[in-house]
Image 1: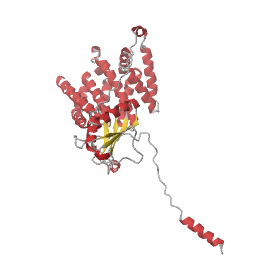
Image 2 (image 1 turned 180 degrees about the vertical axis):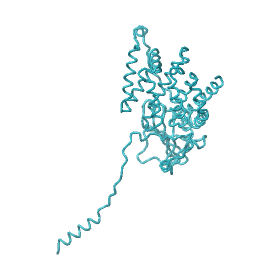
Image 3 (image 1 turned 90 degrees about the vertical axis):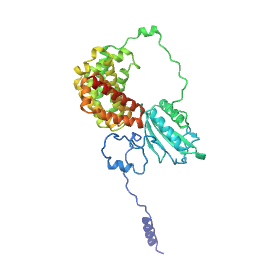
Image 4 (image 1 turned 60 degrees about the vertical axis):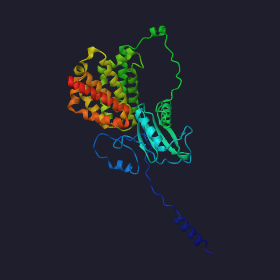
Length: 395
């Protein structure tokens, strides 16, 4: 017997049975993978081929669909083999009824959402950047399981969102469940009299440090500095005099902080890369709103924007109008409308710029979108339109 011949046959058989491996290119994991796809709702440009391919087979609602019902789940998916979250609830109503209730609740609470009628899912994001997914699954005898999963954001805020979704699904209204609030502790007057607010020089030092952080290559460092200024210009979070003085220094462009804020906003708004861009734009708009509002409370500053901030107004107004037209993020669009409203009210230059750009049509489109998707956006657009009309007539 020839062992060599058998060994060669065995080697040949083993080589023939070797599986064929194919190289695969794996995309890197993106921390912002859950970020909602935000399209330009108000422009007429065609979507890119990649976007259209990704959307094939998906029954995703958009702004062009019927405003009466954005989410209609007719055939909910069965409960997955691994089960549902332990906080999922069973609602004794059909999936179309439950999805319609939740849809209305999300709009009335101004939660931005995208819907998938095939998978029975809704991807939601609040103004405080709490992101969660609502899933509907088939229950016994025509009932529906409702599952709400947190993806990102504050856990306490998510608990309120989940309560509101569950209440809406059960037909109890879309409000959050009222929980017993902790007693508020008041500061004794003796201690309040001992408090010494930061001096103007200390506030200027804070702005200089923020200016240095704005030049950091780490965008998270920039966001941290912006959020700190948001708090320091908010009278509900710091001492009222401190908030007013900080807002005043920003609008006076100490350490070139005002011009830097506008530059940051224009850069991020024109190049929306990720959820971090949305948070940066949100923070900048809040700072500017607080600053302009602080000026509007003083009669002495009636001509300040036109006299000292002419370049600031001319650069900011077109970007605000463009942001309203794109509507990448409904919550930021509301802030842009509020900022535009304050500028138009306090500056004749801003009013003329808005009239020159024919911004009324863009704001009307935002109002129509808000009627379908976002109550807060609808109200902000309506109030801005009313102010623009009254300002144009008076001027």
